[in-house]
Structures are given as C-alpha cells and as structure tokens.
Length: 180
Image (tube, rainbow, N blue to C red):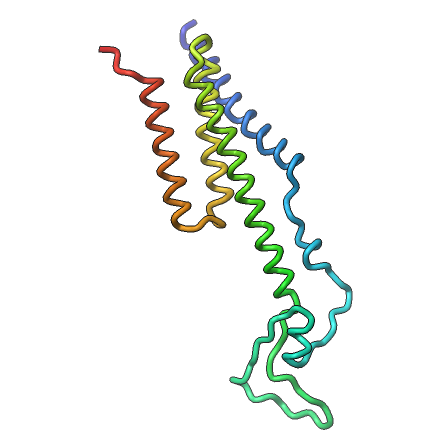
C-alpha cells in the first residue's frame, strides 16, 4: 500500500510539473504572438535582378562584392561583380523583433517560475502540491533559459545561472532543513 501511495504521489507531482509548464507556454503563445518572418520580409514570386551596389543599397539590400573571380564577358551585357542580399534590412529588423520577443518570454516565464517556487516552498498544507509547484517553477526557469539562451549576451547568461543557483539553494534550504 505504501509503494502504491508513493508512486501515485510522484505520478501526480510529475504530471503537475509537466502540465503546468505546458499551460504556461501555450497560454503565453496565445497571449503574446511571436514575430512572423513574412511580416518583415514579404515573399514575392519574382525577385528583381539587382546588378549594382547603388540599386541594391537603395532597396535595403547588402551588396557583396565578388572580385576574386573574374567575371565572364558576355557580348553587349554588363556582368555584375557581386551579388545583392535583398533581405538584409528586413532580416535585421526581424532578428531584432525576435530577440525582443525571446527576452519578454524569458522574463514572463521566470516570473511565473518564481511565483511557483515561492508558493510551492511556502505551501505547508499539501506536500504533493508544494513539491510539484517548486519543481514546476524550476522547470519553468530551465525552459525560459533554453528559449532565451541563444539571444542572451554572455553577461546575461552568467546572471541567469547565478539567479538559478540562488533559487535552487533557497528551495533546498526551505524544503530540506536538517532535522537534528
């Protein structure tokens, strides 16, 4: 009977941890939409040929000179000595919007995780829910960090890790005090 009760408790804890984090992330995706690349760089069926630097830059592109290979001479035609990345400006704008979105999602998930850890740590009336909320908060920190890690600067990464360690130590001290 004790093994069944213990297995049931841990099944409930794991279920709460997973479902609560799924809820956080899905609700966040409904409330706060991710930037869509096509809104920044519309897809067109026919892309114009841009064969010179001035025309490229005027259209928001980035000219990449290619002077290492001699251009073939075609009778009567001007052959470009480079190529144009027409999506340069819109790609930079999309990347900036995505970075801001990732930062805001990170902050939201950290706040939700911190609330879970705090409530779970302070909840004395139900051990299963207290443990589940604490673990769900820790998992929320992990998910938030993984989502934002690629966009974060190195200093921010160190700060994220320091805060995560401090919270984990705090939970360990609050939940597992020495009983001597």
